[in-house]
Amino acid sequence: MSQRFLPYGRQVIDDDDRRAVAAVFDGDFLTTGPYVEAFEEDLCRVTGSAHAVVCSSGTAALHLSALALGLGPGDVVLVPSVTFAATANAARYVGAEVMFVDIDPDTGLMTPETLTDAIDTRSAPGRLRAVFPVHLAGHAVEMPAIKAIADERNLDIVEDAAHAIGTRYGNGEDWIAVGGCRHSQMTIFSFHPVKTITSGEGGAVTTNDPRLAARLKLLRSHGIVRDVSNFVQRDLGFADDGSPNPWYYEITEIGFNYRITDLQCALGRSQLRKLDRFVARRAVLVERYRQALAPMAPIVKPLTRVHGCQPGWHLAVALIDFATAGVDRATVMRELADRGIGSQVHYMPLHMQPCYRERYGTKSLPGAEAYYARSLSLPLFADMTDDDVDHVAATLAEVLGIAP
Ligand SMILES: *Cc1c(COP(=O)(O)O)cnc(C)c1O
Image 1 (cartoon, rainbow, N blue to C red):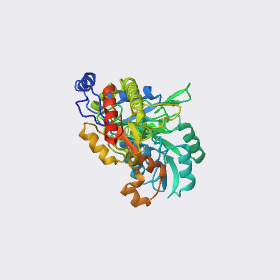
Image 2: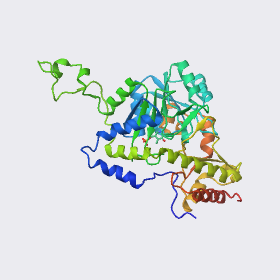
Image 3: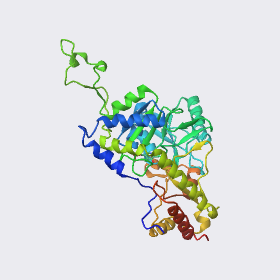
Image 4: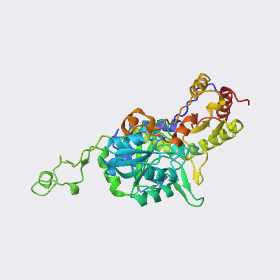
């Protein structure tokens, strides 16, 4: 029997992480020092992308991506309805509108069909400019097909991989790391403690486009230009002898403070070194859940696995037919919590949130609503034991009134 409370997700911090953070205090910088670029280089190596720009959160990464693409008023971004609010909010931050896309109720993912359906059958309140696919729970969206649709319509793609660091997809011979941007302009990650690896708070954008990378870096820190070769006001920037004025910098467009500290980057680097181990352990735990929950079918089912994907699982989602079980989800969650087991719903569809209902009216997306009705995320983190999983499964069976 587990003694400790099992949250649906949490960080795993070891002594090497503590030492990595402590080492930052021996250097000259707490922020914008050498750890920032080192973390960016590490992320490029892990994802295979040419550029990585780290920043203060996954939300900041999404906002920076929307800015870097030049999205704004009159533009429309396609976003799956089942995702964390930040995916859609990023479009709104820059004044663009959101068109919610339905998902497959068994995988939780946007599909080529749901994307095409949204494009063809729903009236957009502006010009379609971009799509933000979400690799929900760590499962990869079918990116080659999404890219083909986007190319046909001239849409840019930003992958929201907040759940999917370490995920690979491909045809069995050629495995592509999520974040390599093989089928997108940019990919964003989050390093919030609940995600697969953490920097405390933090995020990143990866891209293969040097111009996008430069814009992301510019907007991350107030839009400040320090490279003398890019100064536009030569009379103010340079002395009479042609040398650059030592105090001078330029702000050509308004940016933000979305920087990340060296302390956070040191933790992020240390955690990234364990990514393979964390992903492998999470895969073992998810497989154990699959076996432990199997006798509870058809009332309880795991997510349907998509083909051609090696997931870096972020969530262990169970799809539960609460009506047939005869017990509602709130009761199940409370009774699990009473027995030391955390659970959560990822997520209520965004088209049902008041802020989006007020803006776009009441819409119906049947796949998203069916997924939402059944989904419950069970505990999953890298230092859970096999016994923890068996305990969660047995307790869930008990709470649902399913005989073992
Ligand atoms: C966590 C998350 C984000 C935002 O990341 P933060 O680092 O918390 O700002 C964005 N999208 C999804 C799908 C997430 O789960």
